[in-house]
Amino acid sequence: MTEDWRSLHYLRTGSPRQRRAYATLEASGLWPLLREFDPVLAGTVPLGIDIAGSDLDVLCEVPEAAQARFAALLRAHFEARPGFRLAQRRIGGHATTVCGFRYDTEEIEVFGQALPIAQQHGWRHLLVERAVLAAGGEAWRTAVRALKRQGFKTEPAFAQLLGLPGAPYAALLTLENWPDEMLRERVASRPLLKPE
Image 1 (cartoon, one colour):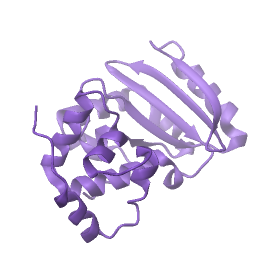
Image 2: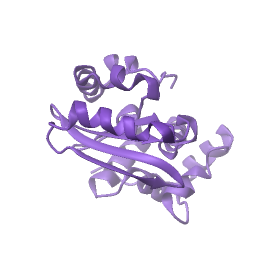
Image 3: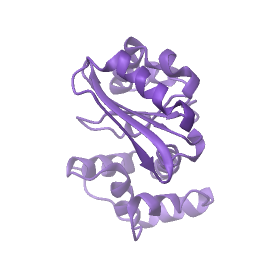
Image 4: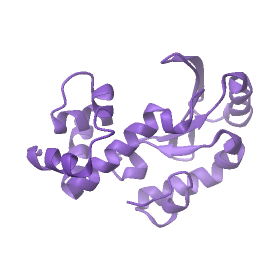
């Protein structure tokens, strides 16, 4: 896959779900509003492994000094939206703002952390998962979706299918620097679930 995930343009010609996500994000004005914070869509929708109820996960780089302003911006524009919630805390030692709300038919979660996007776990997981799906193809997409329908979160679903020991979120990151051939061998050696 060669998508430029820092832009939303690839969504316009994607699956019906991706096109809906694009329309919602455009209508919300979220990208222009958060431009200075380098927004990027992560999670299941870019990978095409979303299921009913999957939300749109937006990652942003928000320096610690800008966290209050970031939160105020989200509150000013989206507080009236259904399901609005906003929390500020430290995650992994980094100042983080997490904001969720519903826009049209979509649940949106905005995650602003005082860390460059390339170092955030959501982005790093996205790249590992993309590599696994590139190696495993549609059969792996189907298997991940099947586990998600059973209640698994995305990273635990991948860890289960790959047979990774330990905490799934950390275990998945151990694959970041694997050569493509080694990853293809691991994927090929794992039995998949039968589709539902």
